[in-house]
Image (cartoon, rainbow, N blue to C red; front, side):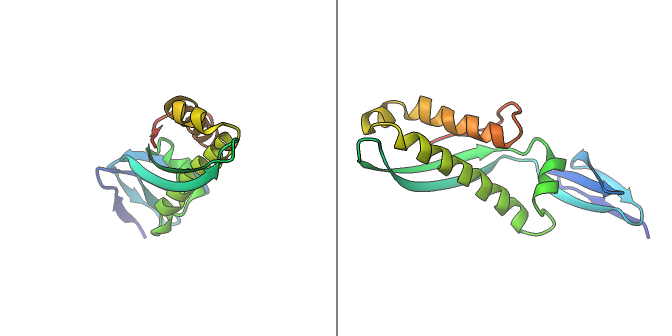
Length: 148
């Protein structure tokens, strides 16, 4: 049975045919044949927030709060890794981004003094988080930023 599917203007339409995922684009429509599956993946900017306490190299506990703004640039890969057919797909992606940020910050802060953390929060710390997110996303160009 054929069916007509469509994505909203702020969503990618990702279709699976014979085990191959293809991104049809933002706000697209498609007529799908039998055996085809589809999901929509957000194309708009998303947020992931995090908060943590980490002891600096000089033994001072520091509290961090941050928000990372990101956007999916490879919806087929995102659909393969997260279940966007349900509500947990986007939440899972946001959790991954937040955990990458937390892990990288914990590592960096544990090796820096409190004074250095404060002085380099927008360079070393934000840059480290940015680089970690690029590594997780496949090494492509950065599409978001880190704040804190």
